[in-house]
Length: 112
Image (cartoon, rainbow, N blue to C red; front, side):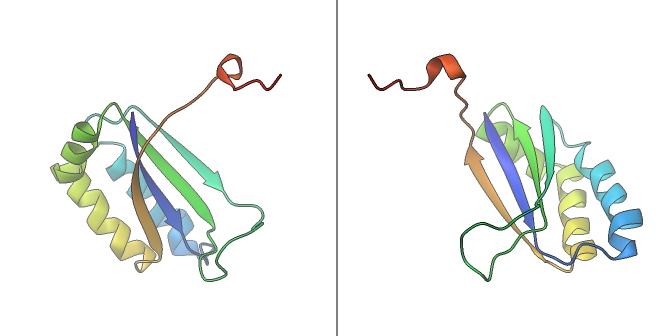
């Protein structure tokens, strides 16, 4: 599984972001072909890291493969969502692609 992660920089509290921009972006992004699931996280605390990279929100889009993620980004829907993302955030975000791996508790390494 692969995911596209967007880290949003503050401030994200303006009315245009919350009422118009966010809903429109979600409507565009959720039409990307191959999208399997998504998560949105509001960052509550900043514990450690570069002081120049504080994030307000993290949004993740999951796809079955890198090829499907790439196809979604190149699709008409992906292009429209990306263009609007730049517009309504004022380019205040970082976007990364990562291979997503998960482990269940029974798979955790147990030290004896």
